[in-house]
Image (cartoon, rainbow, N blue to C red):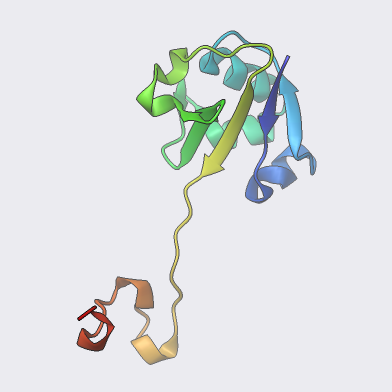
Length: 112
């Protein structure tokens, strides 16, 4: 069995677990096993035969997008990490409802 690490933002769907044991010889089989055993978590990261667009998946520290995608091999000793993309910024009355992260830096912020 391989270990799948669950980030804090998805732990509620994993019953609070930080790690889950999964089986499969590639990423597709691992995510299908996860979806079968933990449907709430599985549906958040995998659906319609694809990894959800906001989720990055790593096998032994390597992004599966730079390898073989869903066909990336997973060994019994592998660690699979789910890493959802995060958005930043905040909405405040001072910025008129726009995110401060979207504003260009002032000239004073540029290095000289």
